[in-house]
Each structure stands twice: as structure tokens, then as C-alpha cells.
Amino acid sequence: MSFRLVALDIDGTVVDDTNAISPAVAEAVLAARAAGLTVVLSTGRGVPGTIEVAERLAIDDGLGVSSNGAIVFTYDPYEVVHSVTFDAGPVVRRIVEELPDVMVGVEEVGVGFRVSHPFPEGEISGRIVVEPVEDLIAEPSTRVVIRSPEHDAIEFAKVVEGLGLQGTNYFIGYTAWLDLAPEGVSKASGLEVVCERLGIAQDEVLALGDGRNDVEMLQWAGRGVAMGQAPAEVKAVADAVTGTVDEDGLATELHRWL
View 1: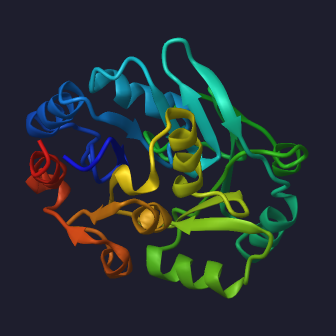
View 2 (view 1 turned 90 degrees about the vertical axis):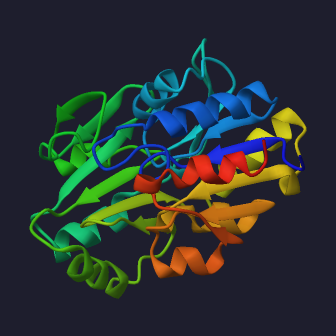
């Protein structure tokens, strides 16, 4: 076995679009840990959503990467060991000027989100507090989410890319969803922190993901594997492509190495 750490995206990799974890995936993660591999959830979710999935996978210790790499934390006890913040104000104001009806959410690390309007049910987790946009962006934050249910994903992506956003890192989701992160921050940068703490080399990391926010992680890891339903640009940077989340592609890949 050439890997010591397995980095797993959550949505579309560990869980399907109903937030369910298949028995095959749960068993494969348990088998990986039993074989001595360190399993790290590396996700765009906030800390509460990450911990919820970790508990379902019986991961009760170790490190997690959340908020697309802006947060690295320990499990049980929960402690943030690394965080990066940025001033999202200029970018958010520009987006709201172009798309006045968008929803804005600012992460409260380990707690939930402060939002301009309630998000569609189930899209964000933790405590939710509604506040004016200017209050949300008054202080530096680790992560800002922009949601536009009135747009389809393609139309929304064209608008966002046409803005030429500067001074931030951003990831466009499958829906009309935009994650804003500090410049230079990604799941890869969060995993670098994890590996440094654990004494694990980059080429000893196996990473799996399906989204555009997984591109840096898949490129960075010793072996980056895209899920079968991933967009073409994600598959293009991966070392391999496994089955879809509905085909238990994660379990298939893990069992190659166990």
C-alpha cells in the first residue's frame, strides 16, 4: 500500500444528492481506517456539516478540512488549528450590484451561517441568523456563499466569470452556487496543513472528489481520483476516474488499495 492518507470530498463523493451514505461506502471507509489509513474529510461544508458526516462514518478523532480549506480542525475535542480569513466586502458588493436578488451567507466557524435571506432547506447547516448584507461583510470571514435560485447553473456561471473577480478564490457549484474563499486557499492548501502536522508526504495522499472545488486537491495529491459524475474539467485533471456516487465509486477506489 503506497498511501497513508485518504482525503475525501463529502457531497457527491461520500454522500449522494439525498445526503445518504451507502453501506458499501461506509464499510470501505471503516476498512481503510482499520488498515491504518488516516481518513480526512476535505469539503466545502462548514464545520457542523463536516462533523455530522464524520459521526455517521464513525470518525471520532483526527483532523478535518472544511470551508474549502480555510479551516482545519480536530475532532473530539473540537478545536480549530488553522484558519484563513479575507475581506469579502468588495467582491460581495460587486456581485450584489450585478445580481441584486442573490442570497449571501457568511460562515460562523463551528456555529453555522449568518445570511441575508433564508437559503433553500438543507443547503447549509448549523445555526442560521438573518442580517443585512452590509452587516455580514463588515468583518473578515473564512467563507462566503452566494446563492441565486432564480438562475440556472450555466447562466449563473457565465455571469460570475464575466465579473472577473480579483483578490479571492472562488468555486462555482452544480447549481447557481458560488463559494468565495481567501486567495490561495483551497482543499489542497488545507491538506498541506494536515500533512505537515501528521508528517505525511504529498505523494502519500489519495484524494477523491467530484466538484470544481476539488480540482486543486486532485492535482495536488499523489493520486487524485474523480467521481464518475464529475464535470469534464474535473476529470481532466485527475489521475483516474472511478464510478459515480450512485455506483459507490468511492468504495471501488478504496478497495483497490486495501
